[in-house]
Length: 220
Image 1 (cartoon, rainbow, N blue to C red):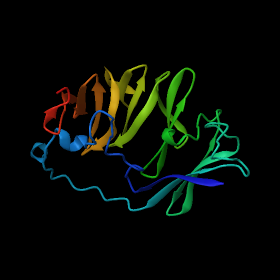
Image 2: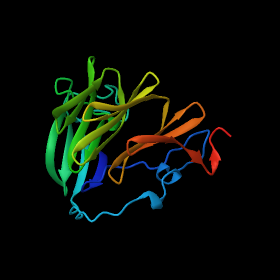
Image 3: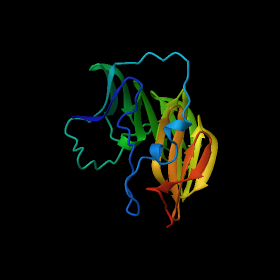
Image 4: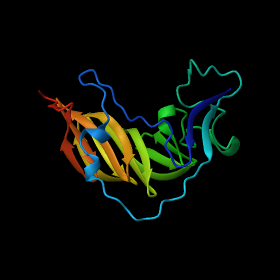
């Protein structure tokens, strides 16, 4: 049994989620909530050629396993994560504790034809690239977002009411609150938003600011 988890074209991230819905606030796009086009700058740098290959990430279960029930919850003996490039097998990685790879959809990212995996161990949270270890995050951290910008891997993780933004495993900023809009690449800068009480903040270009939604302060 083979289950498709993600599909991407070239360097794009599988299934980007630009919008966030919250019971207290209407859906909004944080890219437009604070930074207008007047803030952007033009560049004379040459445009990188686009990779137009089609990549597909699938999860191949052993014959007879009921993936709908998924009684083994993430680690299934004889299960493989497979990446296809233009519908031809590109790479295959066995899911197992010994390989430190699990089958959970939200722990596997298909970016530019490469498989970035998150594995929560007892001592740390491990980030892997095509089955090889890249770096670790503190134990207990759950990764909510992973992006790649100019070869650097940015992760947004959280644990016990605190979030952590890291680049290649090195902490960039730590804060408290609830992730309101997941991590994404905004023209080469990592961006995300979080809620602390009734206040919503956006992180962009190494700084953060309080957000107003729909022209009104979020605590009005």
